[in-house]
Image (cartoon, rainbow, N blue to C red; front, side, top):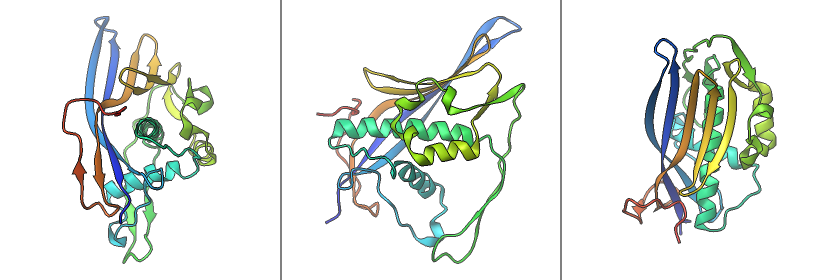
Length: 230
């Protein structure tokens, strides 16, 4: 028998509020995205996936594998649906935070998977140089340690080797959790200039599936937010 897997489907919102100095008026832009975290009920954490070696660098697998790697050193093992959704919300919040960090780094990646027939080369990404840029370490983030995934040795090593967030001087960084429904926020603020927020929240639905991805069955089909199902 395959263990039951749960997929929490959430909606994220990215909000950018910019003070336009020429007109002294605020300009607001919102963008939404959807994502999912697969959770293995038997292991009480996201599953370790084993793909075909020639597809190990597919974006979907890389994303799911990265989420799993962030959980391996955490001793928390959610025991019920409420705890699972809180766990997954924190995981997505932390993943988005390090995505902000890693998106500011240059370089080309080369790797191979066990059993693969060749090397995989990740192309270099374009980097935008910010004006009056400084590097802000996580020790200066507000409520950084409120996220359970910030406390692992790998998290500390990652920030030590990659450095902090590269932002305009005077920018503050804060992590926040709100309830009713539960939302997890990353907020970047430079007073008088901009407010940038990423909010993980939304309509979370429940699925079951087998570890190989087959047998996917959605067990809720409504507009309710299933972050705290009974």
